[in-house]
Figure 1 (tube, rainbow, N blue to C red):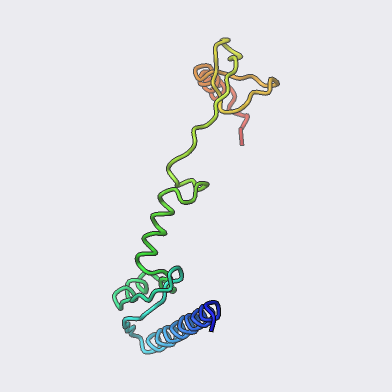
Figure 2: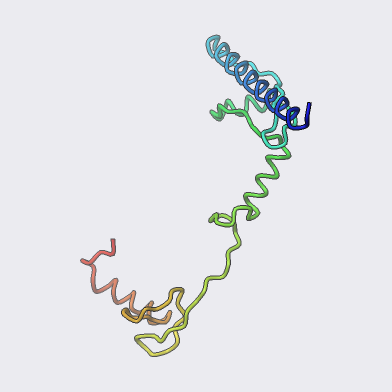
Length: 153
């Protein structure tokens, strides 16, 4: 057998083991629900990332059941920790939760009210007024107090 074929056989066996494990879990759950009591026993599961076996303990199963979590963990504790660290550590750079962001590009413009320099996060087109921070806040105060009938939304 070649390495590729051996890998195919191993992957097939792992899938059979997962499906068998899932079937047995569901059967046990149905039986225990019919009896009104839930009994748990340690189970050996296989990690979806590294394919290593790990134990899904009876205590963990009870914890999952109490919180209504129907699916068992698909990753071993070390792969779960690595994935969690990757997700919170900026592994997904487009995520809003990544914590670090590139500095926003600012554009220089002339304030339409006072004539001073205004730094704005957009490129001014010239067809609309641009205000510095102080004048913008002053405009916002006068707008909100004088024009209540006109809604922005």
